Image (cartoon, rainbow, N blue to C red; front, side, top):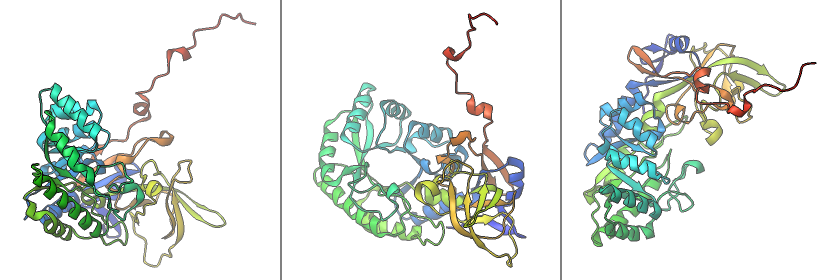
Length: 430
C-alpha cells in the first residue's frame, strides 16, 4: 500500500504540509494522518472486491477518531463496532445505522439496548448467553434483531499470539460443530432473525493460507445450514490482512479478493469486509521530539517526549515501527546503534533497541511510521501525561482533530471526597 509522506528538500511532508510546521503549531508528540492515504487505501480495497456483492464495514477499533471515520464514511464505508461508544462515534461521523455491525464477546444489556434503538444492521453473536440477552431485550421492545453467528473455525492465523482470534484457545466465536445447534435455537426465538455467519481469525496476517482454510470451513457450514432449512444471506469474513511495518510483504488486496471469490463467491451471499489496520495503518505517523541523548558504557539512549502510553504497540506486541528523521541528514552521516526510549518510569517504555540511527541532538524531530492503527486509539494518560493530539492533513491544509487536553481538563472529572476537607481543630493554641 502507498502512503503520502515524503521528503522534499530533505524535509518530511504529509501531502502538501511540512511536518515541522505542524510540530511548531501543535507541539509534540502528536499523530498525523493523511486524507489522501486513507482515500487511496480504501479505494484499492474497494476496487479489489468490485466484481463481488461486497461491502466495507470499517473496523472502528483500529482508529476511532471522528474525522477519520467521517473521511471513510464519505467514501461509502459502513462500520464494524465493538462497544456502545464506538456506535456513537460511527453515528456522529455520519454512518447510517443500517450500515453498522456490532461485534464483540461481551455486549452488555445497556449496549444491546442502544444498538436495538438505533436500528443497526446486525449483531454478530458469539455465545448462547449473548443470544438469549439480545432476544430478551428485542422482545421487550417488540423488535426483531438481525443476527449473524460468529464461527470460530479453530484456525491458527500464524500471527502474534495477542491478536489471533480464531482458535479454540481464544474467547471469540462459536465452535464449528456447535453452530448448527445455535442456529436452530435462533429459529425458535421470536426476537432474533438469522441473516448470516461471521468470522474473523486474527489481525496482521501475512499469508493467505489461514484465510483459505477458514473460508473452506465457513463454506461447509453454510452448505450444511442451508440443507437444514436456514437462510444465510450474508457472510462477514472480518478483516486481518496485514500491512508492511518494515520488510514484511503481505498479500495484496486483489489476491485476498480472488481467494474470497474462489472460496465463497458461488454461495450468493453479500460479503461483508471489516478492514481496519489495512486502511489506516500506513496513513498515520507519530511525531516526537528528542529530549536528551544519554550515553552509558554499553548504550546510546535517545530519550524522546513520546512514551509507551502514547504508542503502546512496541511494549504490548514487541512491534517494530520504522523511525524517520523529520529533517534528513546527509548520506555521509554515520549510523550507529541506539535505543529509542520514552520518559515513562517503566523499562518497557522502549520503542526500539539498537536501531541504526545517525547522530541526534535535543529538539530533533522523529517520525514513527505506520502508526495510524492502534496508536492514538490505545493511548492512555499513564504517569498523568496528557493524551496526544491528532492532526488530519488534507492537501495543503491541516486541522487538529483531537486536541491535547490541559491538566485542568485531565483532572476535571476527579473529586476529593468531603471527608478530606479540613473541618478545623478543637485544640487550643500554645
